[in-house]
Each structure stands twice: as C-alpha cells, then as structure tokens.
Image (cartoon, rainbow, N blue to C red; front, top):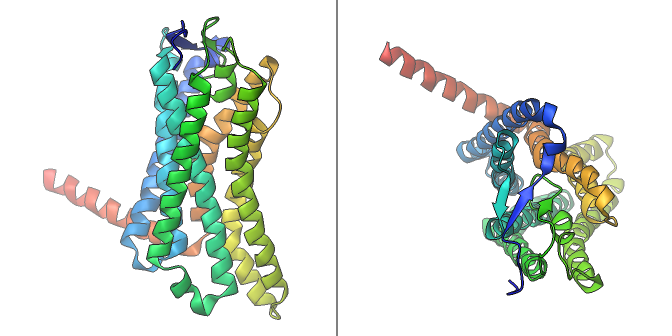
Length: 318
C-alpha cells in the first residue's frame, strides 16, 4: 500500500440512510443467513452420505455450496453487526481482506459453474464414456483451477485498488468493501486503474460466461440431433437447475460490475448487492433441491436421520 495513504479507517455507510429499517433489515437478513447456512450444509451432507450422488455433477454442486457459504460468511456477519451498531468503521487492512475473499470466492463460483456446464455437455454428448472422461482426478483439477484463478484474480484487484491514495472522505457508500465505492474515495484513481479493474472483472464474469455459453451451444447441437422427444426432454431437464442459477448469478453480477459507474449508481449497486449476497445464495439450494428428484430423496433421508437422532437424544435425557 502507498506510503502517502492518510486514511486508515473507512465508514461503511450501507443502510444508514434507512434508519427506520435497521431492525427489520437485521431480522430479515439474519433469518435468510440462517436458512442459507442450514440449506447448504444439508446439501453438502446429503451429497457426502448418499452414494448415488457421488457423481461429478454433485461434486461440483457440493463445491459451489461450500464456496457460497464462505461468501456469505465474509459479508453477512459484518453486515448484521453494522445494522445494530453505531460504529460502522472498518480498518483499511480489514477492508482489503474482506474484498479479497469476496472476489476470490465470487470468481471461484463463476468458474465452478463453468465446470458444471462442461460436465453437463460431457454427460449428454458422451454418456457411455462419461465416467472415463469426468474422472475424480479431472473433477478435482477443475475445482482446484477454479479456486486458483479466483485467488489470483482477486490478488491483482486488491493490489490495484489498495495501491491508490486515500486522502479524502472515508465514507464507503455500501455495506461492504466493494470495488466501485472504495476506489471512488481515492485521490489518484484514473483511467489506467479503471481499465485494469474492468479487465480483471470482465475476465471473471465474461470469460466464465463464454465458457458456459460454448458448452450450452454444443449441448443444443447434441439435443437437436436426438430423434426421441423423451430423450431431448431428459437431456434438457438435467441442465434446468444449472441454467436457472447461472441466469440469476450472471444477471445481477453483470449489472453491477460491467456497467459504467458514478456516485449516483452506488445506491442501486448496494440494493443489487443484497440480491447476489443474500437472495442468490438463498435461491441456489432451493433450486437444486426442488428441481432435482435425486437431491430431494437424499435430503429427505438426511432430514429423517437428523430427526431420529434428535428424538433419541431428547428421549435419553428425559
């Protein structure tokens, strides 16, 4: 970080402009956070305990659930504290750390979804060779590559952002350390920095989205060649949950990070950020559990086991 940086702490203004809604927002976000954690934990446990779910598709789903759980843990607990606290300050190192983990995990989510689309293409295009082409080793390599790309891109963004000089206002118009509200406080932010950040964010969002589109274009070609209507329906049904999640994720993230920024757009970005930090992680486990018969069956078994364990524990204590 630059030696001439004079600002050592920031103020996360966030929802302070809605003082009458602080308690309501706290309750809603806390309730949503609990549901996100419980739902994702149940999905990961169901995949771990159900041998019929030990396939590449569910391996990537488990990784996505874990990554999204970590993403919410980076943002929501701090947001909940700030909603009830008068002091909403965050130090510069804490801000950099939060931004690093948020964007590294977010990038990992993007490339994990790209890996999931490739998995669906392989399953539809080469069902007889699927197990030999999507081996556990290949799946692990794809997952590790997603994590590595996420961390490397995030490091580049952090170096670019926090090498700037912060010598003016320290009020961040957001509830976490997002890029645009932070760089707007810098004294020497220029076109070079803007383009550097845009290239990195575009690499993650546009790059991973292109990989997904390519996979689904090839899936479309394969499906159109199928003579059976039942076969086409079955092939497309295996992609429906993934397509739903991709549409929600890239729709909101693209709106926030790929459009021109000015100070008047920060409130819109903040409201949209609630969607992809709270609503999207909340919808993902619901989409995958409600639209997937195997997952519903496995979750039901896990719930039955959990209920049986709780009942036995209570009876022993009584």
